[in-house]
Length: 384
Image (cartoon, rainbow, N blue to C red; front, side, top):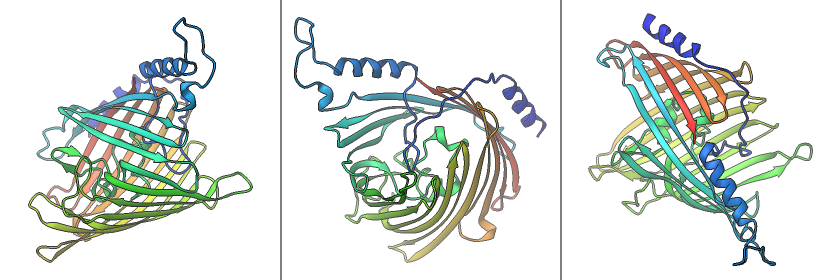
């Protein structure tokens, strides 16, 4: 414990505060990509300037349509997250030490104004893979259609990108029941799958214009990212989120389907969840409960799991926001299988392209002989 607190004090002492800039977010969920950085901003500005006019061979502007009448200038971005992890758990040998969490590069834009696209790739140590690719027809707010690979519409926390999450990892229900922590062929799913989605925002408020109802309906392969369907069955995922007042969201989520595991067995997935979220004036409150039931079709065995979490983010200054999180997961839906994590995570936004985060976790895992242990994480987020 003394070593953990000493590292935390040293890390905090080297943080120099400056003014932070807020990133634009969509109405119901934060963007899955956090914006351009130092280098990619220069690339984006150059592309936008070049596409604003079509020069003739002699260098003079031509009359008529511009390239931007057909397509927006592509927006490039990239960021990486580095991590230091210490743990006093028995057998962990002090934790993982220094590691690369991941590096991401992405590009998005619009074609003919109504068609949005995004491509995102990720490097995690030696693994390079596609993370997102999709095209979305978005002529109306009330009805959009998306096809490709993207986040599942299960749990309110799943769509958050790491910059907006506030803590160093997703909740246990998000990792285990939305698929953030699932992996195929050594590649993390990241809560994603391939398929078709219909979504929309309905019933605008006459007072401030916010939409009272958001819906999402998905038909997905069920096998995760970069993987085709293996049994012809599809997963059906849906959510409804109501916004009774601006920035307060109450949601329900449902998921039914199956997937084929490495041994070729088909496993049913039936899951539901409820959530509440409030993001206003840089204050954050999120809480969710999720339940899962799966039946191994070939062997008629059944398993259940559930969990819940609550996250609170308190803005202290323009450059410091402190998050606290209570996170519980029952892998067999019994109290004897409960793993509970209590976390506190100061976020130091010293520049819009540089975020430093320190997190202390106290873990109580009833599945272990030595049930209690402590962790200290330090993470650096850099946009480039």
